[in-house]
Image (tube, rainbow, N blue to C red):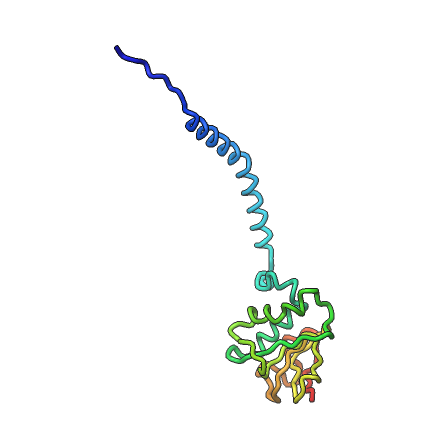
Amino acid sequence: MVRERRWQLTRIQLGVVVCVVVATALALVYLPIAIGRFQDAAAANSALSFDDREFAGGNGVVVDKAALYEARSLIPARESYRVVTGSKLVGGTALTLPFIESFARYFLMPRRPEQDARWIICYGCDVRALGGHLDVLWHDANGIRACSASALRCSGDRADGLHGANSSGSRVSPIS
């Protein structure tokens, strides 16, 4: 005698089948939505300019991108710098003064911050309070300055006293 074997699912097997069916249904519904969102994010990222990509989260910290680009072009890669902040900054956010030094550390690599560096990035500081003889090599209307604590001029300075990348046409002037 041959017995007929009936297919009977145990509770565990039935639970596994239900989970697989539910997971498949959810994947069929939500996977196209997720792919569409990824495509939207990729399109938004590809539309960013080079400096927006380079600054990324720093857009909420940095007042004037030109200031850090200028500092990076003025300060030699093996030199050190310091960031000095103050109350004379125009147009900053609540994040600017607490975090500009950290962002500058990232942006200006391989240059390293040092407390007594001769290169100074002044973010709203009073340049005269720094003491000594400073050459303001670049400045903007927001109170941001790139200074050197020596009388030496950078090779990028033009003979007429204007630095080439300074879009506002600010004169390079020594402060003593």
